Length: 269
Image (cartoon, rainbow, N blue to C red; front, side):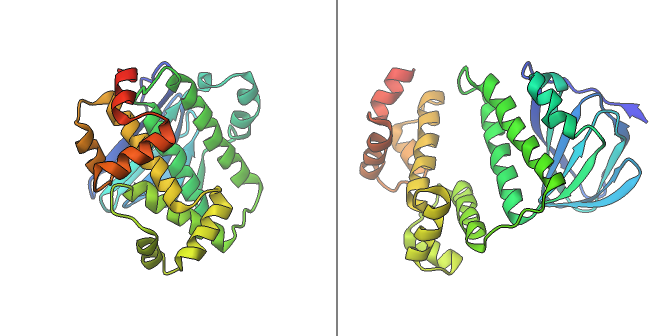
């Protein structure tokens, strides 16, 4: 078995996508750091310290240092790999969360709600790796700590979720993935086969805002990033994030940010 070393960023954390073609294999190896593997899509087989597991969408593996593992893709398999060192945390976390996970590598078959929580944290970490601002170096360990907290709790408790909570999380995930599409209360109602009023009620109970308010925030946050990081015309940004015309985009932007898109770009560039 060979040691494979990865170069981690100065945060001690690195999150990246790994794609495996059908029939491809990664032979047994180990690392001197921690890894979390999250299956985004496809199917495969994993051997973890001599135990075999089916590895498919929404399943996750925690791999501790020196744990021998291998992967074989039985279909095209896409995996998010989160590598991190023990130095990514302060003393409190090393003696708490990380210590609770040191006993050995673990395989997790996540339920719908837990998978949604994990995906959201991974999305946040992918964004922070873009070095959007000077706080990204601080944000990555914070989100990693939240992820490890989920893993520790999965070891110690049986979590049950209310059906309406799961529906609300499904709706939020749909908005996260499809914010650029034309989405209305009626289209959500058709998509999830629930009345618009019922959707608003369960979503607001879970997230303290309506689905369309949440959608507006996603779009405007994406617009803010594009205004700073690209030279795209405002009308192009408006189109890309899902608005049909400029006037509702300007109105939403002013309501949430307090200034026009043009002024926001001027201030931040």
